[in-house]
Image (cartoon, rainbow, N blue to C red; front, side, top):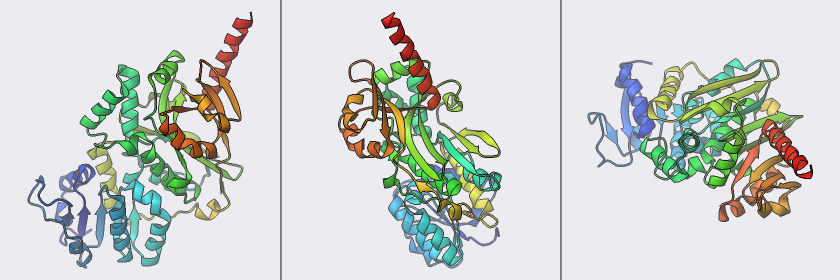
Length: 405
């Protein structure tokens, strides 16, 4: 990139925007910045000597600007910005995971039609360059599963709850004060943020474009103290786990609070960190860990995209084979709930513990149907991994034998 021509426009100067600018200035690339488009002109900015504007046309009517960095929170406006930029054949970097998850297939088509570039590593796993890893490291292997903690805010909250013994609301307030959670944290704690990221990874790993409304996400906002105590009593933790798995040409995915034990790598991921496990046919399981929240970790990944936009192109190489995969929501999973009886009409099997508490086997599709009911009654639902299920059921069997003895 030339340092003489101011050919870059930055949309947004919030947390990530400032993080991106930090790396621009630190690497003497700030001379390439033609303008920064902001929403509120009256808000004070540091540094204040930059070319701030509220006029989007300053970018799209300037033929010298060939690179757009989109870092705003409004996903509808972000889509318009990225769409217009790609239609002009510009190079675009974005971190707006909601916008990308809703429109990725269309944006890929625009990129290919008009010859632009579209990179968005910063939208997925904070400081972990997981898209690069999938596209390059696994280019010659078949990925069968991706699972991980993709939301630093929820993981920070759960860490405080489990390790410091404080309440959910206090932990969430701490996350907001630390800059890991927004004033309205719904996207994080209700599992939407993790879902958007998972869907983006699903396209790169499995070649499927799946829109958010067709997938299951249940967050941590309905967890109860009894759920925390149950986990601690069984030497478990609860993590918000995003999972996509391919088996026999069927693809299943979900975002759910999940019991994990100390043998699971996710058990040891704390605070605002993310952790991603990738399983493939030839390599097996590999685990990647890095900071998932904060302006500098995400800003670094955005800056890396910016520096490599000339020579990097996402190939979407799995899309042809992904057409053979059937997205399946009729698969059953085992869950624990503080009111498992509320799901009675959906359950295939049920094991009651104390009162309404218990385990149940339920189809993913039925959990999607039951989401409004769960939120209405603030019912917790926590998935059981296969290892945890076996452990809990073995303990239950042992207790039953003791009772009969």
